[in-house]
Length: 97
Image (tube, rainbow, N blue to C red; front, side, top):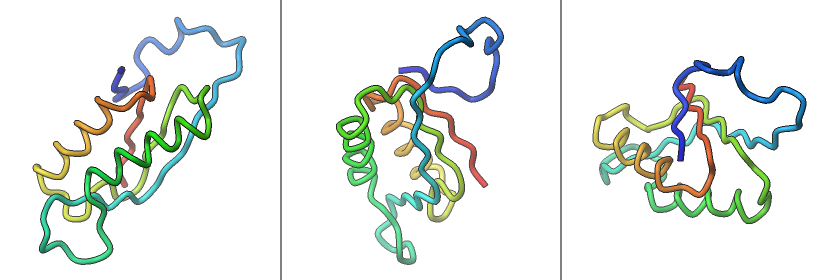
């Protein structure tokens, strides 16, 4: 699992091939039960990442944009990071917004 945070080394990659990617946005993950709705538990995010892999076995990259967590708290960010690390998706690019 490679957690991509920037495009370092991108010039060295093979540019003559097609890359299968998936885009997810506004995940709103929260480990805090008191978070305002709608929020997603990390376990649900993990099952969604595996569903992406089942639907698109060739996916090499997931781009996650928008509100990654519901409240921006450190515990939720860590939980999302663990989901990204444990996922069978080779690379995840998080672009919070």
